[in-house]
Image (cartoon, rainbow, N blue to C red; front, side):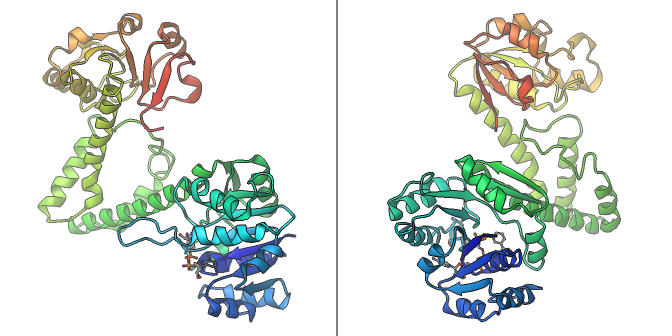
Length: 440
Ligand SMILES: NC(=O)c1ccc[n+]([C@@H]2O[C@H](COP(=O)([O-])OP(=O)(O)OC[C@H]3O[C@@H](n4cnc5c(N)ncnc54)[C@H](O)[C@@H]3O)[C@@H](O)[C@H]2O)c1
């Protein structure tokens, strides 16, 4: 079992200290607040959280849980320090890192005197880049030692929720360990040998970012559910039965579908149906900002693709894939069509390859749509990939329905490839060309 110090005895730190002590470790909590230190040292919980008082009492009686306001004592008597200090919002929304640097300085000062290796674990929620730009430099400066040689640093975000913190801590959905040195993540992995769920070892920045992605997703889910309920109620629909049915679809709804970064949504359904919902909500005088943001967000993504292509300074463009997804010839509201239209407007010379789209076969609303948006589409479209790539400087991959071997055989090192659809790594063009994903 290990010797642990926990800096910050707030909601996260107190639960962390108690649960690690419960697992048999010797734990010392540190806080600036004398009241919190006094409470923990006396075997009482400094915060209110179900089951926490019992856990702290049990560990206190077993002499495995102590608290101090002296950071040096804590660092000298432990091998791993978990940083759980607060990172609140400033008035303007910016993240306040005002507690992170001082705590690193304090630990660094003591590391100066410490001979054995020490692992510093950042548990507080911080934006990507914080470990690299603040934590490591502050520790190195104050200690006069080097990360890697004398001490290690890991980013290990916390996923607990207040109210169910103990159960969440002891059975996390996953454990994320960010490090710049595999030996440091290995040390923490061994420390977490008891933890159920998958352990991910990744970079500092990815570990920092994962926490924000999770919280942004949770916030999106709550707002989505609330807007669904609000609209349903106003429409006289039983929101609960609608949501029950919605949740039962684990193929498209509660699943990994649509969650990989890629290109804008399109086709004959999503834009039309989102538009109709928003129009109806407006008629009902409902304020549904999340629903209202969907089409503008999609348009911004399309503009991102336009900017990315224009920023190459090259004007001869090959667009591979015109329909809104592979294996269909439906061009209605295809974002690829909108992209072509925008690039033509910017003076680009466009050639389009799409295996599924043959103008001669297009009929009905599909044909009418494309003829209205790009009247001379016939002269731009081809099913001959070699011809389309021949004069191009930039190659836009707008479909997954493309044969890698065929593509590789016609790509030249001078081609700049822009991937809009997030091809599987194994399907991406092989080396030599410059490859850039739109948002990865
Ligand atoms: N509260 C949650 O449910 C939760 C869940 C996951 C992640 N987080 C993240 O964990 C971090 C901590 O959150 P919290 O809610 O526990 O914060 P908190 O404000 O409840 O506690 C922070 C504690 O750190 C102490 N502190 C500040 N500087 C210190 C120093 N130099 N030395 C020792 N102690 C110091 C403060 O006195 C305070 O007691 C934040 O980054 C937060 O975003 C919180």
